[in-house]
Length: 275
Image (tube, rainbow, N blue to C red; front, side, top):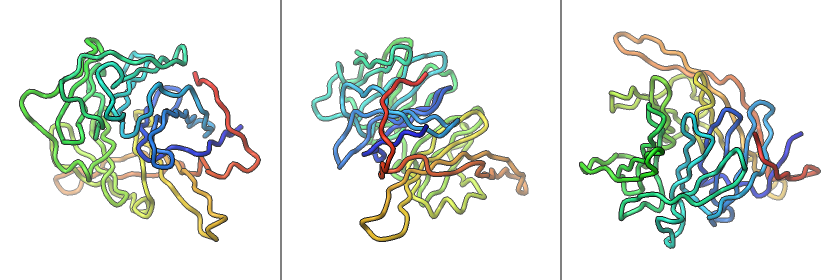
């Protein structure tokens, strides 16, 4: 059975993939941050509402580290945030949220521009809205700024950074997906996905070690009073190809379809806790 939620936060949400599915956390509803959390099951393409966070957040960072049954959420909150409520953690075993008391730098970014789990699966690399770099250690529960003053550049055109087994990916402008090797700072466009450049892609994330997935918004044509805001989903595989002396990466859409609609019709919302 499909469960449709209305309204559904999309803008400003953060997404976390687990072995069981994808969590959509926070975001904006009617222009205001929300504490709402949804769970998307990519096996049967259903959406469930789960327990909300303790604090409304938009533009947060969320990570589920290897071997952990918990989801860590940082930032994305109001000016009233401090070290006691700036971060919170969701325990998937109990279905509950708790504030996370972290050892944080004096200047905590209210919004996290980018974040990615590093190769060791125990640290999160994050970039604040002013391009400053931060690192979070789950073992030490410590969040600290880089001491050498290194900052990222061109963040406004590179979103949703991901690290797979071999490469970094991000969502570029105009519906493009970009990739690079960890040792190379130059980003390249994934080829073969030109049809996605016609869509308003809102999120890129890892589905499994072989696939990435995306969400985008689509509004069908028709009279204004009959238009339905839909959330679409697609899974993408990749194949490297040699081009002269360099490698290109080509993408292929394996599955796509609408998974969430703002028009409830005869469907009803559901609140539950996923596995």
